[in-house]
Length: 522
Image (cartoon, rainbow, N blue to C red; front, side, top):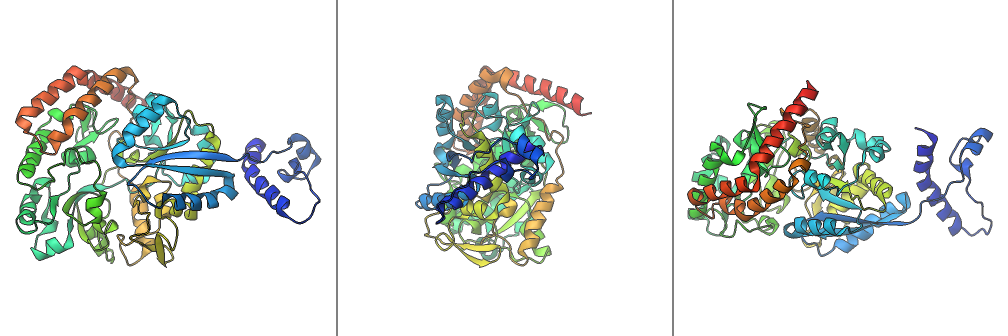
C-alpha cells in the first residue's frame, strides 16, 4: 500500500487520538504531525504532509423494509459504534417495501444528495439505474478495503460489473439457492401430506385444496410471482433483470427468447388462474405489495421458497430445523423442500447490494461505512437485529431470540453487508451454529455458475424501449400472474403491448450483447 493510502486509513485513528487528548485534564496540547502516521525517520517526516483529522460527516442511507416503530434507537446505537471509527453518523431512511421503488425514482430524478442506497438486479433495478448514471463507480474505493473485497467471492463481484466497472457492493448472502416451497409443519403433519414428493409447482394443487377445504383461517398459497422470482424453476435464466423480455433457456445458453411467449409461461399463468379461482390466493394478490404481516401472523399455509439448504439436507447433517416460516413467527414452523437444484445466476449474485449515489458528497466515508458493515460483526448485527436487551436477547455466542414487541424486526440479514456475520435466530437450524453458517458459505463460494454468469445487459441502447416495456408490465403483469384475470383474454393483449413498447428491439439487443460477451470470454 502506498503512503497516501496508508495515511488516509490512519486519519480515523488520528481523529480519535485528538478527541481523547482534548478530553484530558492537562492543558498541554501537542499538534499531530506526519510522524504520527509514518515511520519516525527524517525522510518519512519530510515526505508526509501534516495530517488533518477526518471532518464530521452525516450519511444518508435509503433501504426498504416494513415500518419499524423503534428505528431511532437502532440508528442511535449504530452511530455510537461507527462514530469513533470513521467520525461519521448515518441517517437510516427506511422506506416501506410498497413505496420504495417509486420513492427512489423520485429521489434520483430530483438530484437529491443522498449517500447509500439498497438496490438489486430486480427490485430498484441496479442495472437500469447504473445506465441512468444514478450510482458512482466504486472500483478505486473498493480496492482500499481488501478485507471487505476478500469476504465476497469473485463470482459475485463479476456479476455486478457494468462495462467492466463496479457500481454496487454485493451482499454476500444465500444467493446460490435452489427453489421449492415451504409448508407449515402442523398442516403437513395433520393431513399426512407427502411434502417430499413434490417435483413441480403444479404438484402442490392437492395440498392447497386440502387447506382450502379444512383450514378457512389460512391462506393456502402466498402469492409471490414464481416466474420472476425463480426463473430456473421454468428452465430459464434472466438477462439483465427478471421482468424485461429476453431470457435464456438453461439447456441452451445461446439464444435469447421472449419468456412471455414460452410454453412454460402459458402453463404457469393458466395454473395460477386455476388456483386463484379456487380461492387459494388472496383476492387482492395482484396489488398486494407487503406480505410481512401475513407471515408474522402465520396465515400462509404454503409459500414459494428460495432455498439453499432444505429440511431434508439439514436433517441429514444432524440439525434440528424449525423452517423458514419460523423466521417471521417462531410459533409457525415449516418444512422447506427444494426441488430445483442450486445455480448461481447473475440476477441472484446481484440480487441485493448497496450502491453509493453519484450525488453523494461523502463517497469515501460511505465506503468506510460499507466496509464496517462487511467486516464488523457488532455494527452489522446492530443494523440487522437491533439493540440487545431491547430488540433481541442472546441465548448463545452466535444465536439470538427476537423480542416480539421490541419495535424493530426487519428480518433481513440478506439486505446488508456480509451475511456470514449474522447472528442465528429462531428460524435457523439448531445443532451446530458454526457448521450451519459454514454450510451455506461453502455452498455459495463453490457455486455452480450459469451459462451467462457475469453477463450484464447494458440498457443504454434501448433506454426508451425499456421504459415503455416497464410501463406495459406494470399495467398487466401481476394481474395475469396472480390469476386475477383470464389469461386467454389478457395474455394476447399483454404480448401486443410489449411488442408495441419495443420488446423485440430489446431482445435483439440482448442477443447482440450476449454474442459479443461470449466472444470475449472464449
